[in-house]
Length: 493
Image (cartoon, helix red, strand yellow):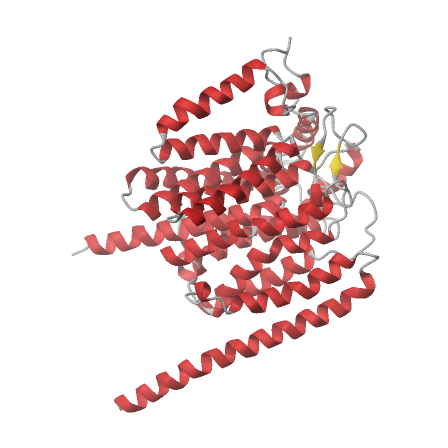
């Protein structure tokens, strides 16, 4: 009997590499087929075809990386897709769509983003079903996300299936990632590998950005309210590029804090510096401020308080008080050398007017729509009738959920975020493990940045940026709930 079990184990071990090789070949063939199918629609965009060819090659190559062999095949493919996702942004046409995904002018090509999102969501659900850990989704705070996902679907139905399809898809996609991804990366090693893979994939963002320098720039002749040069890159929107760069920057703080060799510290610091330059070049006040706050909190939490109080804070104070020579809007808007604060700061670049219009529309809705939302389709129709030229429909993720899913959806959204904020703060303060402290701090900084960004941007419905933030939050939720359950079981006699 023992010999039979040993033979079965040996046979299974031999079949697994064969199965993975077959999957790799299948993925390569699908990639070649996709490149062939996309070639006629490239519209003089060779980069689109190049990415369609290179993407599956990199995917197959990374499947065999020794560092990823601790992951099962399904989670491993998801991690690789997440790491390679920035490559598909090469197909974005600047100013083709606003950051909420609604077309500003007719598209002249086939975008890769929607195809990638669909494949990733289908694979994520399939792997989640195969894992069979459904009972954990009735626990807090996953129950808030489950309710919000249901309200998002209801909002699509009551607002119009055609007009609300894009708003529903973009919003639901992020919620699905937040709800399911964390269950597939639960151990310290799995979480650490995913965060490192995401951070190092920022190289692809910087590489793609290099291709778009000079093409996706807002300046005096563009749509910028302030007469400053703003880097927009492959996204066509400076705020979108800043949000993406910040999500990688936060992961970089974790990677740098966990680096144990001089080479890894140098590599992490190099990427962090380049991402910081990108954030400053986008001239986004919100993201720029969040970057500085995150670095300050990271230095303080890591015990580097002499560096924080002796160098970082005095340098920032001097830059803010002295001059506006560097041309960064974050400093120039509040500099003491100016006679008065920039009026665009007080009106939040005109967002206050848009928010006022939306609150009037919401107040005129009946009780049902105030509780369950106007519906994504109705929100889009109302926005088009306002004739505002803004980078998103509501310019606020909290307002987006209030209008789309009503007061009930906004309450669920806020409950999920603030649960993570409080739990991550407590976990960072109480733990003695280096990993737990660094991971809890990353979750806190990520959620805090998400909350602040959500006040003035559409981060909740912007898949380019929120996928990484949702991934971190999702992993923290499942890690925290599993740690709590394990400790309860240990305390039970």
